Amino acid sequence: MKAPEPTPGWSANAPRAEDRRQRARAQRQHGPAQQTHAVRSPMRYVVDVYGRRLRDVINRIVVRYSMVPDDDVFDPAVFDWTATLQANWQTIHEEAMAILSQRHDIPPLGDISTDHQRLDHRRSWRTFFLWGYGYRMDRNCVHAPKTAALVDSIPGLISALFSVHEPGTHLPRHRGVTKGMITCHLGLKIPADAGQCVIAVNDKPYRWRPGEFFVFDDTQYHEVWNDTDEDRIILLLHINRPMRAPGAWLQQAFFYLIRHSPFVQEALRNMESWTERFSRNAGALGRSG
Image (tube, rainbow, N blue to C red):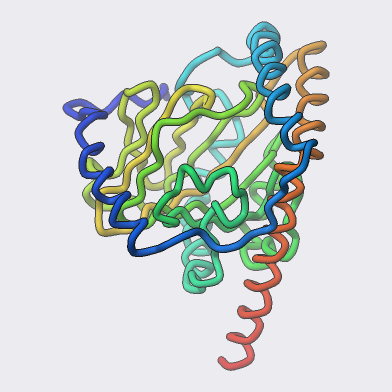
């Protein structure tokens, strides 16, 4: 097995003019985002300013002590556990679809993490967390017990969530915070017109495939489109990059600061609110059935 090859015959610039038109329509149609628990504190400013400076230093150390290559896109086989999830992808798909039957109780990511609102201007990126920022969401895991058991066994798991890009979703070019975290996508439901549902990493386009992993370093610039009339559904995982000491110790300290930052604590409060809503309405549906 090897890392996925870029998709030929595709231009990263092609969808952008249409996206500008979609953005304007979405702002007129959808209005402002739902009110969330937003943190506005001096501590948040300090984390934002000094955290960005600190992360550049830490990323250089991460590369030095990394036990896996410093690649933009990885061969999934580098991570042994991916084979187990791929072998069970249909079970994961079934649990995801059952949860998504209650779509109105699954929030746009911007309602969980307000820092993501600038990415998802259409509010069409929906997420159901099993793990978030190193915290297990036990009440959500009840609704996907087999998937939860599978992800619980992943070494260094940080986050695990069902990620839905509804038709027309576009996430503008952006990048993540730390090389100490690797992003893994397991394809569950991919639109039939896969050429119009693409992730571009450093302007090289790739397609998701059902039952297969796409693994990449999200500190590289990436952009995502779903220009189809179908949902794109994946299991999205964030894991700790395998590292040697002392780099691993420094990375653990950095993640500790992130987990206890105002950004993450805000997201956890919002997540808990949506989890309670989902569980309450799922129980009501069960009683009515």
